[in-house]
Amino acid sequence: MTPLVQVENLEKRFEAVRALGGVSFEVEAGEWIAIMGPSGSGKTTLINILGGLDHPTSGRAVVDGMEIGQLSERELTRYRSDKIGFVFQQFHLVPYLTALENVMLAQYFHSITDEKEAAEALRRVGLEERLEHLPAQLSGGEQQRVAIARALINHPKLILADEPTGNLDEENEATILKLLRELHSAGHTILVVTHSQPIGNLADRRIELEHGRLARITLPVR
Amino acid sequence: MPRRSGSMFWRIFRQLLRASRGRLTVALIALSSGAAISSALLNINLDAEQKLTHEFRTLGANVVVAPPSVGSDAALADAAIMNRIAGAGSPQSLAAAPYLYVAANAGTQPVILAGTWFDQVQKMNSWWKVDGEWVTSRDDNSHCLVGQAAARQFGLAPGSHIELRAGEHSVSLMVGGIITAGGDEDSQIFTSLDVAQNLAGLPSRLSLVQLSISGTPSEIEAFRSRLASALPGLDVRPVRKLAAAEGSILGRIRGMIFWTIMLILVLTTLGVLASMAALAMERSRDVGLMKALGGSVQRIMRLFLAEAAALGVVGGTIGFAIGVLLARWIGGRVFGVAISPRLAVFPATIVLAVAVALLGALPLRLLGRVRPAEILRGE
Image (tube, rainbow over all chains, first blue to last red; front, side, top):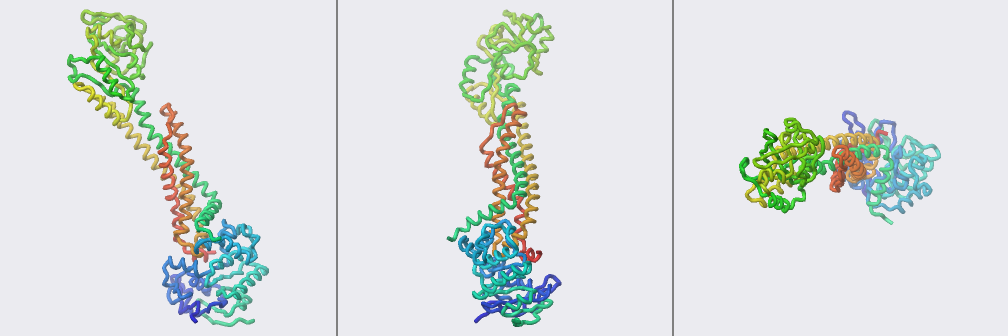
């Protein structure tokens, strides 16, 4: 079976600075991968390329049969709305849209909006009482749950989460991790960038980066 | 139930307006102000021609009907000509004054006597300064008006009498008023047409007819041509100096209004640009996020352009309403008559306001270039 994600000799340079160099790995559909490493090791750069937010300088990154480096801007836009669900450390919700509208925004950019489906997605993350709340009226954990509902609404092939619990307290971190585990159990493919060893240990495999290079791929310590 | 994406567009649109109401209000004030002045000036521009030509008509005749050979003894038949002028059907004819000029004597000194219809002369030359009283009835055969130079020459004042003689005929008239016109009229004596005709022994004859016609230069020319066709064998000629001055003044006023509107629109655009630049800074993160979520540049820009267009429509409508009031006020101050609002100015104001708003929204359009990775990494 063809892996969902194939990364071959991937390199990304920002002028003279090499953020990624010669990184190769594969991810099977349904896997939960933790991408780990110290600050500046290239984790976010890698996830941005896989998410179609950045072009690689050289090498290949293929997701669900689409080689990201070969896609035009228009194709990248379509790729992001069809294949990827993003969860960011800073939540990145649109501040003037309600929780429900933030989820519907992803539907709007994908195809057509379905308010009932968006409300159901929020109910699944435990926010059925918060549909009409603005992000500023939600706690950090609630905002991140809205972001997760938004990431899932278009049934993406790949969920990319960049430090999803980085800004949360322990209680909210536990809630988010529980949600990620449920998603994994439901068969979603998840790539999580994290500094946290406990979160890394929840993954099927850990891809560790150092100075933009692949240091090792390890199995979690359970 | 899935919904058409259009409803979500308006949902985001409404929230966008609500969220940015502070900055949008500033842009709206700039747009409304620019639209108000533009609308007022456009209304004035459309009405100015009518108002100015009306004003010009107080400056005297602008068309003269006379026999072809100037200075000849040829004279016109009064009743016939006045009827034919009236029959030419000019709705714009403000006044028509027949004249018979007679070389007469006051005592031993010669004087030019102008027999005319007093009521029409007053209508046509309302700006003349009169010491004493206007003689207002065309049938008043006992009074005369005397030019101020002639009054000085003959020692006349309102209420005094003068004996006029031409050949075998003579008449004694009371001076109703002394006129100051600033031209040849100042050395003439004005009597009723009957008095002049009887004195000259030329009953029912005229030297010329002065007409005051209201309208644009082209309308006046059209009427002049029509009158010339109706009066074959007579010269129907415009008073060139006045017509040229009218055309030149109108042209200059139009030019001034056009360039003022341009200047106002440039300043308004700068005002809108400043607000939109600040708004663009605030929205760069949202645009980066929308692009990351799969929003195409066209779809995101459509939101911002709709916002700018709505701003233009609202600003244009408010501006038009204020502009109408402004035009009425300016009209009252400058022309003494309120400028009537023209409906055609409304769409023109809206189009201008929307164009300015879209131009001013340039910083928002530049947001299309935002690279989501850079924006999201910046956090």
